[in-house]
Image 1 (cartoon, rainbow, N blue to C red):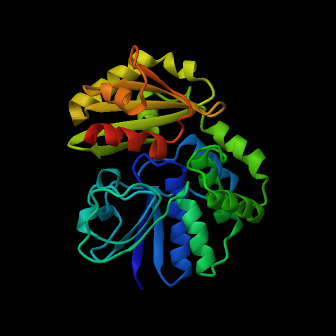
Image 2: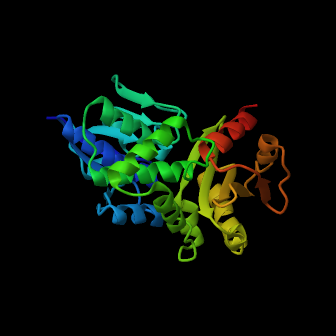
Length: 312
C-alpha cells in the first residue's frame, strides 16, 4: 500500500490545513495510507474550525524527511510553487497536486495527478472529488471543508467565489449540520482577533512569496474589522518588512490589510520596487500606503496585476 504525506503551503490558512485533512481522509478511503501534516501552526480562524468540529490540528513539519521514508509519496494541496512548499520536496516523488492557484516553477521527474480548477477554494475541488469517487463525507470533514470555503471566499463575498463554491457551501453546511451564514460570520470574526499577535506573527500568518519576472515579491494578508487598528503598528511592520527585503532579497513586500465588513483593502508597501503597486493598480502610494477599493483576493486581484507590472 502506498504511503502519502498530505500538506498545504507554508504559513497555512484554513484551506491549506482543512484541505490536507480532507484529502488525507479521501485517500485513506480509496485504498491508500495517508497522513495530513501542516507547514505551520493553525491560525485562530483555523483553530476555531478545528475546535467547532472536534478535529485535532495536524503535526507541523518543515521537511518531509522528518516523517517520511524514501518511498513515501507527496500529495500537495492548495499550492504548487516550490518556495511555498516543503524545503526538501525535490527529494521525494510528488504523486498528486490539488490546487486553485496559478502554476509556477513546478517540475517533476515522473507524471502525476494534477487537478487545478478556477474556483475559490481547494476544498471545493475536494468536495467534487468525494462525489466523483462515491465517498461519503463525514460531518466533521464536511465542517472543515465548509470552513475552508467560507474563509477563502469571505462568505461568498470574494470575486474568487464561483457558483461551484456556493453550491459546495450549501451542501457541506447541510452535512455538517450548521447554518452557514451564522457559523461563517463567527469563523471570520475569529480570524480578525489580531491584538494578541506580534507584528512578526501577523506578517507570517498568511504570507506567500512569488517570483515575478526576475524579482522576488512577498505578499502577506490579514483580515480585520478595523484597518486603523492594525495601522497603529505601522512603523514596526515597516521595520520588519524592510529587514525581510534586505535579508531575503525581496524587491517588494506588501501587507494587505483587508476589511471583511466593506470588502476593501489597504496595502502597506515596502521595498525598492514599491512603485510597482502604482503601476499595477493605478493608485498612489502615500506614506507607504495604497488604498485598494474592492480588493480582497491576493490570488485573483493582487498577484496577476503585480506580475504583469513586473513582467510588463
